[in-house]
Length: 152
Image 1: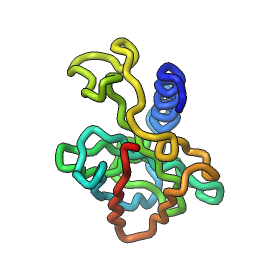
Image 2 (image 1 turned 90 degrees about the vertical axis):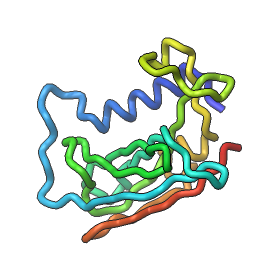
Image 3 (image 1 turned 180 degrees about the vertical axis):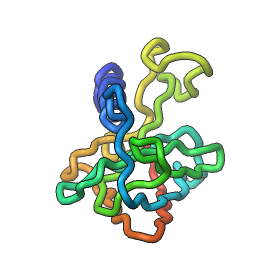
């Protein structure tokens, strides 16, 4: 497992890439496909899991991300802050940051400031296609993708 600081760095870099990092908003593609679903952790719907769709090598889209609510439901957002993502194949990763004892990050606190760590195994958090077997194909008109992941 990665060291906590490296995990936080990887998560922040991924979010920064998806958010565009620039001073202007990303262009909205002609067609964004709505993607929704539910994430279960150890068989139970779980909130506060970030779901990231990283474009596959033949996908021209930029991907997107969503965060699960208390019922485990997510909706993907494109980096232009519009709902949906472009059609294509994506490597799906998940992130759930928390305190080393497994408790959530206190509201209003920054993950790095409280020593937060990645609570999910590397096989779910690594966008390297060879290590991550969670692949999703997104096609019009809309897609519902549910996931069951394990904490160990």
